[in-house]
Length: 275
Image (cartoon, rainbow, N blue to C red):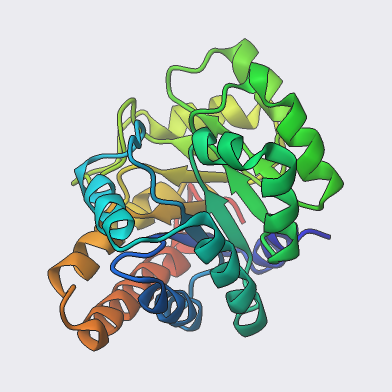
């Protein structure tokens, strides 16, 4: 069983929701990222997204864009990140998910990319700019190498498109909470419950909400209706404020993840939560 599927199976039995932080690999350097992922795992993260910095991150807002620029200026490479994943696989038990745009995959070659990811112990792959219609080759490679290719569904996705995505998706469905780019937002959309209900009619896979989770309150409100939440920009903002003090940055990140974990742990008490 893929580690992602195993984690969701355990969480479901406990009536718990998944917390998935996103980190920008190499921001400000690979050594910090390695320490950060270990700290996040110890602080309650159920999985971690390893973001591959890219020069034109069309789905990302200013916070992650700036993190990518810092990492690229620091000289981070794909080979650095695969080596990082391999070291982390020996240190943490939680699933590791690579989040990347398709260009780095194309440049390395899809088969080579997936094989390197599998060899490093990566469990999932998210590529926001890869259309479903163009994903067949990569999905086949991912399936053959035990990696879950995770697809995104947006509030603007039609019923027909949700059906098609649900048919090929593995691991979980990444539910984009708003029509826009990543970034911390002050509140959860009032239409989130209806959006998730539309997806639930098409799949039994876990539904995880991303784009906009910024606080324990927004995490808790999203988790009332979802099986998990993804937090990226809000975590990176806290790291950025302490970028010159790695020890304090790691503590701030740990405290934030613990707060989020506590918030969504209480979610099962809400009537609208799924147990």
